[in-house]
Length: 136
Image (tube, rainbow, N blue to C red; front, side, top):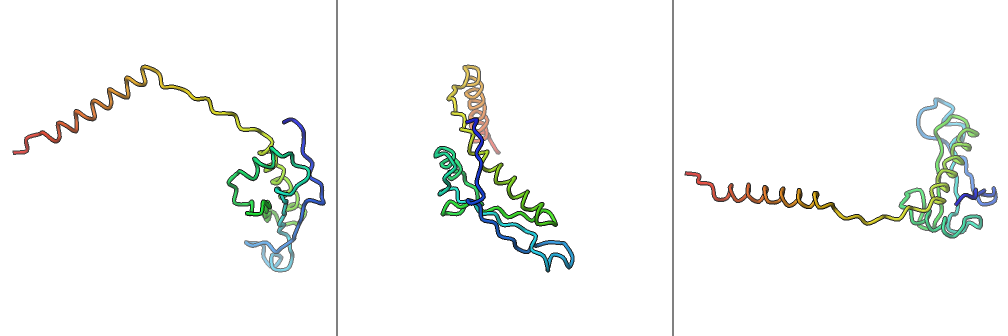
């Protein structure tokens, strides 16, 4: 897929919360962290194939209802955290646009089979020698 997916503002829910971690007095007063929610399961802009791939991913940020929750608190300003959350959303959606390449079944070469059987034979001989060794 080469088309670009643009998510409208109406499908994004932003909440500003207090960030955890260092930051001095500022961290206790200002809500700089951003919690961005995007409903992948109900989104009107996502093509069906992309939606299925995103929901099939085993990502802990996606809830059981199919809502992606991104917490951004890497930066000290609300605006930078907003940009960070949106960039991470774009990266998440981009992973769903690429269809996985199908696995091509291969067979081991004749030489690989021969090596495997030879190793097996040597291991069996070694074990047999251990079991029949005279310990007197």
